Image (cartoon, rainbow, N blue to C red):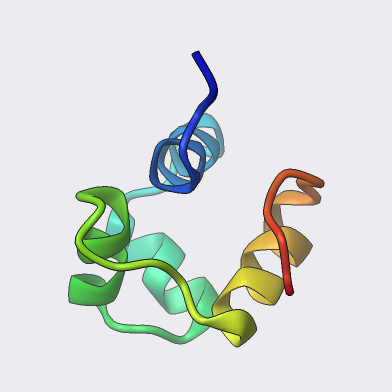
Length: 64
């Protein structure tokens, strides 16, 4: 089964040992934004996807 973007963000965040608050602070978004991403209620906007890709050096996170 292919991992969704929400699952990937959560897995990468947890791999770094970060709480949702830590990730939110690192990419300058609100805690509720990260919570919505991980619960699949929302997807990161382009800027946030670029920041996620930079932080995690993850090729599976698009910045299109």
